[in-house]
Amino acid sequence: MANIKSAKKRILVTEARTARNKSIKSAVKTSIKKVEATVAAKDKAAATVALKEAIATIEKAGSKGIYHKNNVARKVSRLTKMVNSVA
Image (cartoon, rainbow, N blue to C red; front, side, top):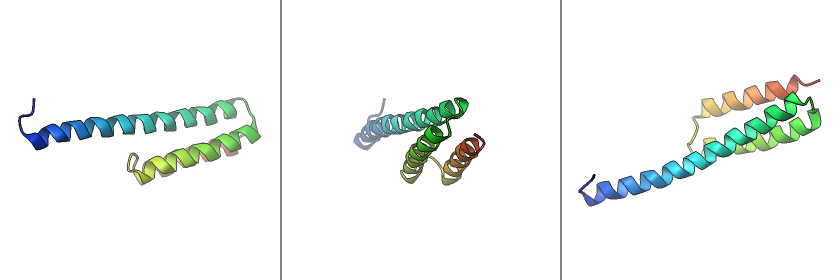
């Protein structure tokens, strides 16, 4: 366990950030699953709406530094490609 005051503070701050990041990552995964579910159901309209919400969630996570910009781009690209494949 840390003895120095600044080290103790870093532990607390890290725990808080980890919890926040975990929450945001969970929201991103949930939005991705919603898009995948609508694509599996072959519902183009619902998939488009879910995609729009998922992109907003992913971009927000990227702007907060939780995901790297290339990771964000890859996730958005894959989801868009998936939705566009629905006939």
